[in-house]
Length: 165
Image 1 (cartoon, rainbow, N blue to C red):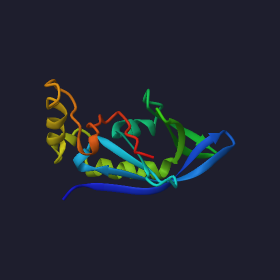
Image 2 (spheres, one colour):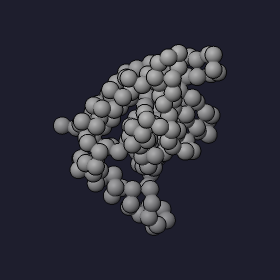
Image 3 (cartoon, rainbow, N blue to C red):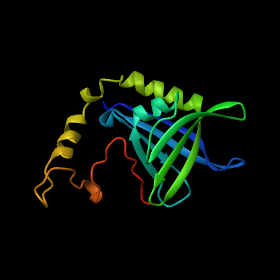
Image 4 (cartoon, one colour):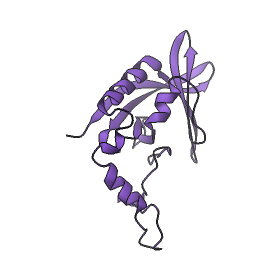
């Protein structure tokens, strides 16, 4: 049976230091994609927005600022409460989100119990994804990602994948 650890929670989209908007979200961790965490934002559009990045980045971001480029994570305090800030950057724009630290930390602990750090490669799906990632692209005969279902190439754990809005 595949390991899946999910958590529904409400994040805040930070618009300014004084103003934020609630954003329902789901955190998902799957044993068949053991190095990654998935966040789905339900923003009222036809389709939810999905981001995927390294679980290690979120774990480290609970304790200290980390990440560069498209995904950055760091701990903060807001109104006396511990929170985690997640900055996302894409060609469509930037978003600064704030998540309750206790809820994210508890969810991360569940993922770490389900698949301890260092054992990710032992979980089903890892070898298949690695073979697909390293397979030559049929069009040019060179190695590298080949398009998967829906025409999207495989994603690296550090790179966010934004859903179609």
